[in-house]
Image 1 (cartoon, rainbow, N blue to C red):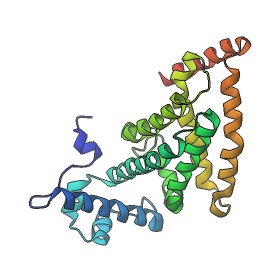
Image 2 (image 1 turned 30 degrees about the vertical axis):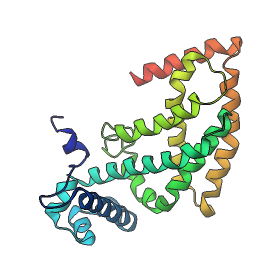
Image 3 (image 1 turned 120 degrees about the vertical axis):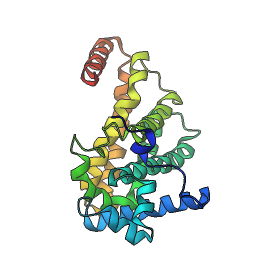
Image 4 (image 1 turned 135 degrees about the vertical axis):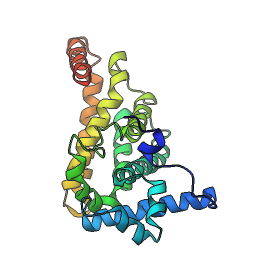
Length: 236
């Protein structure tokens, strides 16, 4: 694990003689090309050489920006989370009901992910491998994961729902785990426009909202704390 941050996340900047703007355009082009090839041919069958060729850049240039295929996927994760945040934050602004904020944020995520449904289906076998660097639970995926948890932190923080203080601290990560479950369902959802996933969000979020409110009751508070202690133990 002696690699630098740039080695892990792909090299910043641009080759000598290229402007920063041109460098960002090249990075985006390489990522777009990789996503298309992953969707068409699968993750394992897509090579850096093929990505470079289809993007119209040299193999050395492709490796300058991204040290491996895994770095390409991580760059895609980062971009996806930025797009989800850009869609979700304005949509939940002014809304204070927790369940409504959660439902709106989850729908915004599905809206952003929809164009990549085919790509996700090809990537899922690799992404669900616990040893894979492109797993959403991997160290390499930490920036995208933290960005997603950060969005759920905002969903919780700006709602009017009264929460147990200990639950408030842990809830954003628990919501992210729920989001991962919904995403996995979405990947396998073959209904038109992933209609069943939308139904799942619409039906599940009011239930989550009620459960969260119920945890304030004295009779459930101890149980809630025991569950949170279990979560912490599993995390450790």
